[in-house]
Amino acid sequence: MDWKTEISAAQARVAGHTQVTPVMESTGLGLDYPVELKLEQLQHTGSFKARGAFNTLLSQDVPTAGVVAASGGNHGAAAAFAARSLGFPAKIFVPEMAGPSKIALIRRIGADLSVVPGEYANALSQAQAHEGATGAMQIHAYDAPATVAGQGTCFAEWQGQGLQADTVLVGVGGGGLIAGALAWFGGARKVVAVEPETSCALNAALRAGSPVDVSVSGIAANALGARRIGSICFDLAQGMTSVLVTDEAIAQAQARLWQAHRILVEPAGATALAALTSGVYQPEPGERVAVLVCGGNIAPDPLEV
Amino acid sequence: MDWKTEISAAQARVAGHTQVTPVMESTGLGLDYPVELKLEQLQHTGSFKARGAFNTLLSQDVPTAGVVAASGGNHGAAAAFAARSLGFPAKIFVPEMAGPSKIALIRRIGADLSVVPGEYANALSQAQAHEGATGAMQIHAYDAPATVAGQGTCFAEWQGQGLQADTVLVGVGGGGLIAGALAWFGGARKVVAVEPETSCALNAALRAGSPVDVSVSGIAANALGARRIGSICFDLAQGMTSVLVTDEAIAQAQARLWQAHRILVEPAGATALAALTSGVYQPEPGERVAVLVCGGNIAPDPLEV
Image 1 (cartoon, rainbow over the protein chains, first blue to last red):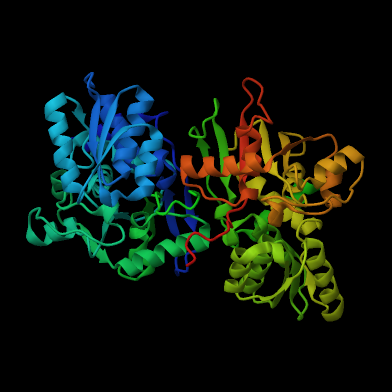
Image 2: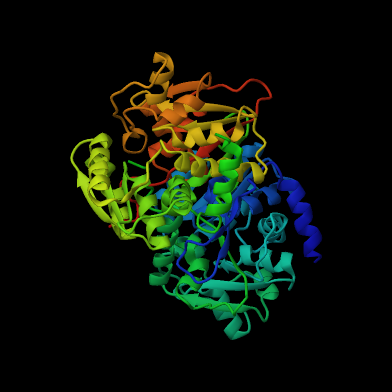
């Protein structure tokens, strides 16, 4: 697939539907070097997922039954938002682990929502059953070309905003976002995959030589807890640098973003930064680094009463 | 005073000490028109106040007794941060109304802090007494040329980042920030002052024809609750547009920023936006508007346990 062409086409498609999210160079994070940040948690519905959802709906014919998505929360909110914006009905399945904050977000958007016991995989199988029964279009959370191309617009946009970094760190769940990064940069910049030790589908797949099932838990699990890495991501990820961080390191990075910059994110949104603040990834002298801040749907919601 | 020259000099002075804060054009705030935002709450210590503090310390000889500041919280944190960065001792006086979240922030920075019963004016008189007794240098929160020029760098920076707006809305407490806006733009763009109905020193002064004392209360009082507008601001503000918003409108704007963009701010930080979301300020057809998001030190601290 000619990913650069796909992502450029996606960028034209989603323009005006997604936010151009701001970028900054932070010198306040307590590191010896500056870090470029892209604040993608300011995207509509609080994560990059809106990009893939809009690209999917705008690049394909949507049936009258509308769309269906399974999600740990963020993708469901994005799919619901994109569907509402474009006038399609949406049916969203989330696992209980999505938590009350993300569930409330999806309800606020107005989607038809089912909360499924257990983990993400259970929500996915119900979404697939709904797709089969109704003919609704599935918006896959990470392992479909239109999703990956949509997420790739985040990095195309960043490059247009003057990204300087040699190395871009990205948190990984099912792999849609980092597949977009790898697809867009195509080796022109180093991409580093950062996963929680407790939810590391990509790292496990790279070690095993093929996608394998992993168990998922920990503080970022509702966003990053994919049981198996997407195949598109796995193919693009060959030979890449993959690092793991502890839940404690994620929580510390989350606190650092808040205390230094009043950037409040969910644990998944701080996972990539955690590789730097914990020292798990140490840039070489002169290596310029960037971190994609990917999600802000924290629980509990600080303004919910 | 040649404010443009002063502000340009300040911008050169504070470069590398303050953050260049990011900007974005928001289409997600539920308004019929886009709004340019500058996310100045991402500044070191969570508000624009770091600009004035650094400019003050970098443009004057600092005595060995160090610096002293009185503050509702944000200015004190900024003064403490700037002093620590530059190696000066700092003594900070805050009123009780600063609240535990801002008090903890100042303590974390490491300043010598005194919490004074009552409102801001009481902290200011203690700071003045300390200045007299020790020879420490007072960093005024809003009514000194170096402070105003420092805050003005926020708007010089924004212009350099491609600000398009015809009209820039700014929240007002003692008037340092909006004085910086008026000083920088010098009539080239319309500046709108937005104050809480319950803390409206500028609006009252403009009505009375001179600075007058007002009572201060409401949800933004610890940041915007100046009893009397600064004289520099008052002089620059002649003939400007001044609007008032309710506490309810401020809280709604605060919720809007969070729900739409995961931008979490204190009430003062949402006050300028509240003029738009409440309809108190309605742009003319074609009038492009911008909002300075000025402070993020919310209480209670969502990550404090």
